[in-house]
Amino acid sequence: MSEFDFDLIVIGSGPSGRAAAIQAGKLKRRVLVVDRQDKLGGVSVHTGTIPSKTLRETVLNLSGWRERSFYGRAYRVKDQIRAEDLKARLHMTLDYEVDVLEHQFNRNHVDTLNGIASFVGPNEIEVAIDGGETTRITGEKFLISTGTKTFRPDTIPFNGETILDSDEFLEMARIPRSLVVVGAGVIGVEYATMFAALDVNVTLIEPRDSFLDFIDNGVIAEFTHEIRENGLDLRLGSSIEKVEDMGEHIEVSLDNGRHVRAEMLLFAAGRMGATDRLNLAAVGLETDHRGRISVDRKTYQTKIGHIYAAGDVIGHPSLASTSMQQGRVAACHALETPTLPESPWFPYGIYSVPEISTCGMSEEELQERKIPYEVGIARFRETSRGHIMGLEQGMLKMLISLKTRRVLGVQIVGEGATELIHIAQAVLNLKGTVDYFVENTFNYPTLAEAYRIAGLDAFNRMPIPEEFKVAKKKSPKAKS
Image 1 (tube, rainbow, N blue to C red):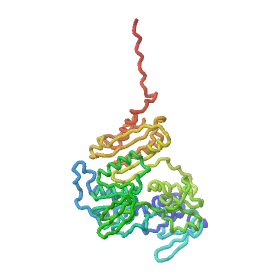
Image 2: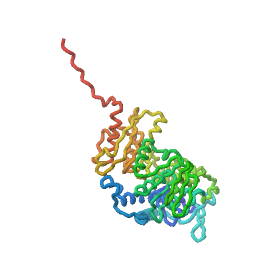
Image 3: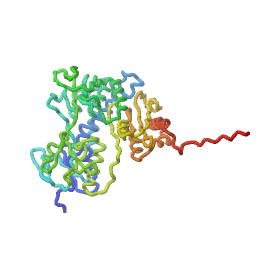
Image 4: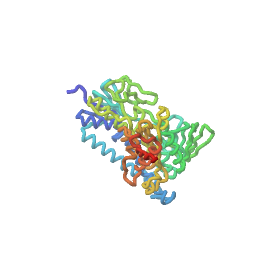
């Protein structure tokens, strides 16, 4: 018998904690998940990934956004869209997600405990349970997967009704006629473009002169043009001096002397690692200024060998998809079980309107590394499927090495981008070349056909490989 209560204790039930716990359960180890919320799933299920994507789908469906190119900008599926309409589908989806997760834990014999965990020693945590009670539990290995919490500066007068953070935003009592979004990161861009699709007057404010800098500049230029066409007022290089709650409206003063007035303000400028209540000092761990924990990116071990961390709490890329993979890898390493390494290329998805998704390198990265390359472009309006769907916008950009002909990166902006990107992911990880898209056929009509169009676009401008060249017949010598 082990001297510890559990082989693995997971703190937090978000994507990384969930994946680690289920993996440990499948390895027939004793595993406990401690979560501060009474419902499992973490930020991803309750205030982040699943809610925001459900909200996006509801907005696009009820607003008739996808059909407006056929029936006009005034077309609506539902004339008066209220906050209750958005929440109805949201709560159904979240309840289903929690039910699935609880079933997965039960099926894999994962124990759960509702409470706030903090370390009291190298192999022991104390869990504060509702009612003031506490209990102490020991574990051989630990995984910290507490995720993040919203950054709430003292200079912003949050009131939970008209001045909200991104967690509170989902519980809004009404849909405003005008909205200011502060912070053009992923969360801010997603919510700003969603509400612009509802014909809300949205102003997106970002203090830097650029946004989403990890995305290819050409794609951001295309995206910027599209969201401005959709009516969103994008203010870059605009720092906020003051936010005032004027009762019936919000007044925002910018450092360039301009003012923005709106019915509601969403503050989405950053998140912090949710580590302040873990008492990490008891085990010799520290965090950076954003509350994030440093780990070995191959094993997800912290500097304390038996304690691991994964998910948003370790920082970039802060995706639910990568967090799941991190949790699985961490659990396997902690429980000394061989597993396949993570693939070098993973997709990045931004569920804005329109969607953005990328995999591989950007054009700026290729230029920085001095890699000679060619670009292939496909516009969704050039595809028959695009015409059928009424798509007037959207593009796929493919970057090809001139030396090896390998696909080095793909960036997509437009309808279905986050689904389409997985073709690029497969080709990139299998070290495929542009020839794949020229040699193979795609279902017709589909948006995936854009890969073939972009591949041919690049192929036709690249040097022809020797094996593809057709030998010219020598003309017979003229008879004398």
